Image (cartoon, rainbow, N blue to C red; front, top):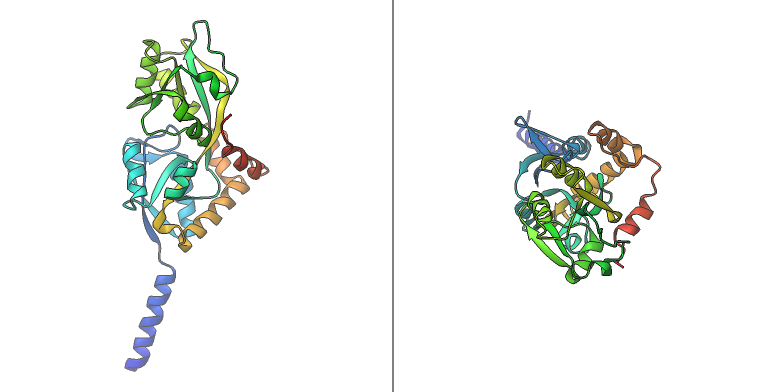
Length: 268
């Protein structure tokens, strides 16, 4: 082969390889029950399965890491990691990272109280929480309604959700605010079934998302990932993965436009 033709062939090969390049992403998160955890040295959960499927379609692969939640958020905010696994969407977070358009799991945000009367008078109005000490896990958000209301709340932060429930039983806080999925696991681990009560209605329902670092905000990778995940959600594929872990996720006919509107509604 002549040198010019050989050079052209090499250039075409490089272009083809570049077009088919698979992005390697540093994907970080904390242990979330049923969503992202390590079991016997193996990573498992809804997030792992969804990301594996997304990667095949959108041409990326994850280098998974588990770490404290605050550190995971900071790494993505700073661009030192590429993808945050499972954050709830808020306006502040949406400015710091690029969320995919639809969640891949849903959580009910609840208040927990000791089951001994008198029970708190809660009807969904945040003003009724004035003066009550509310235990929360440090670095956690419960969604946009909570973010807008929390400056008026007496929050007591602990390093872990387990510590917030221990404080509740010692009367060091009046309530615990948490997503139901994590709280159920902690209540069982601490042997508190029957001793604490989830108050209704929920603070809100919040979706867990995948969020990319801002350096990917206008990159074709985000577009590919977003389109691939929307197909998985709307086809029922994410619902099927969730069901294997005992979680409920809406089916193919869910009104996602209505959900996304309520997710960002202001607190009352």
